Amino acid sequence: MTEAFGQTDVGRKRQHNEDAMLVDAPLGLFIVADGMGGHAAGEVASNRATEVVRQHMVSNRHLLKDLSTNTSQDARNAAQALMEVAIQRACADIFRMALADPTKRGMGTTFVCLAVSGNKGVIGHVGDSRIYLVRHGQCHRLTEDHTLVAAQLKAGTITKEQAATSQYRNVITRAVGIQESVQVDTLIVDLFPGDLFVLCSDGLHGYLDDDEVLPFVQGSQPAELPKRFIDLANERGGKDNITAVVVKVSGEGTMEAETSEAQSRMEALRKIPLFRHLTYKEQTAVLSIATTRTFPAGREIVVEGQPGEELFVVIRGRVVIEKSGVEIAELRPGGHFGEMGLIDNAPRSATVRAVEPTRTMVISRSDLMGLMKRESILAVKMLWSFVQVLSDRLRATNSELSEARQELAVAQAIQPFAEE
Image 1: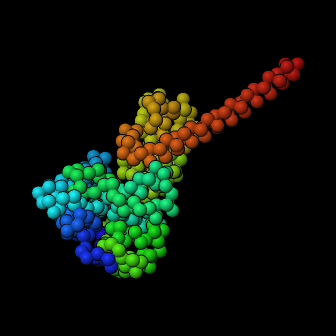
Image 2: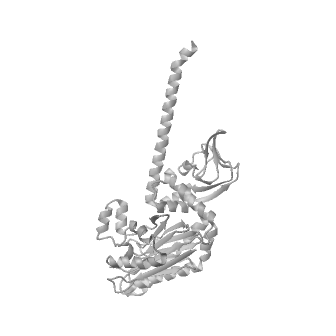
Image 3: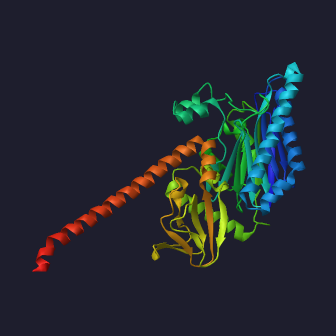
């Protein structure tokens, strides 16, 4: 299902290459790690992290295999936990090595990993190595740098222009092995035929703007790209070690129905006002907590007056919305209902019934709140979107009330003449 290629280079300024990489297509595991620590300790850290994670993934590969066939939230949570535990084990292992050897005290490594299983991928990330996704003529960065400058940008204390020249742009705020444990970012992604992932150390992306990635990879064969990336970084200075791993998803072995549904889920989510301000990475994170549910024709999906805490998005089929037994609307693929259940416990204001066999994407309040707790910027965007949606509804309601009052006033004015 995938083909992958990787290359690492010492660069033009360094004496040793402290980067490490893994390209294991049969296992579906791809890693880039950028070590730090001096006296070859960085090289030890990056290689050790890569090996510990590989071993843990091999020992628990059944959890990844389960992800490819099981669409439940439990399977997704297990796969993300597998990635996090693997990186945490590497972190603790490197920390103990450094304690035992004073010459390696303070060694650590950045770490970015992609594990592929069927039409799903699991990303694990610590530090400032990156993963880019090139899909359908667009490039999306799927990782967020754990650096001081990135934190300052997020807080709004510096501009992008200031960040580009900041003396702190290489200061890492998270690394594997510096302490006994580390906060790990994880993400589940759907895989589409033609997807191309680029994993790289900062020795590459430090010389490559995000908007340069797409034109650089277009028209090139995946096997050529790692060397082309390294040549580019060296031409632009090569002050650091450079590593690039390219993973291309083929159409072979991909179930057409699953791929079509995954595309429909993303397209539908991007059209919903609640999620319109999210980046592609943030939208992907929302999709990672969404489940799917199928309803036969005639089945009630939500019932007027009953509590509910789920947002439903129609992926396939057709539903009708009924108020007090009267049909008031019909929704087709892309339509959504129940979003207010994400906010409060108020009873459902209408009944929604499947007219024909219908498949829906479902996002629960508890899962969304959990995601928002982990992703503060996503939470702010979501809350802002909630305010906008409520504001739009309030304006529409006021407009309707105003029209009703005008109609009532006219009716009252002509009533005496009607009675004559």
